[in-house]
Amino acid sequence: MRKFDADAMGERLLRRFAGGTSRRGILARIGTALVAAPAFPLLPVSRADAAKPDRSPEAKTAFARSAQSKDDTKCDYWRYCAIDGALCTCCGGGIHSCPAGAEPSPVSWVGTCINPDDGKAYLIAYRDCCGKPACGQCNCDNTDRETQLYMPQLNNDVIWCFGTSSMEYHCSTAVLVGAAS
Image (cartoon, rainbow, N blue to C red):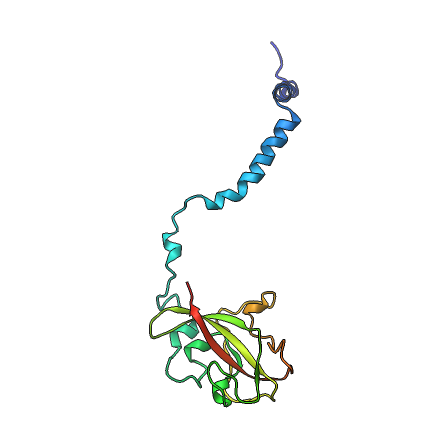
């Protein structure tokens, strides 16, 4: 009776495989797989659930559940979901305009806030007004959906007076950019 030799069987399998393939053939198959891999996310997939964001009261953040739309001098005004600093509405300016003598920064950070009147989400651009001493009134620090500093365009901890004649911070505005998807 012949003894089972795993090494001999493994060698026969590998020699048969090597005899039927070439290095170029293996490299061609690996290359094809690498080229085709990015196309997999494009395959048709049901995205019906992803198309409709959940705006139910349970899914809303604490800020969105208590936001109001009447008084833009209060920190719980719906557009202020990601604002950090003094409100320009309390400092002689408006919700989207700097007070006299202050210069709007050409750069901003953004947030997505839910309007309690219609339940829809809107993109808000927060812009610092610079060039005057700090207002010091109506200071708010709302961090709804704030991200870490490695994504500075979504972080409100930065003084955004870049590109102005003075880096001195005065107050912040909240400009409605448009509806968020």
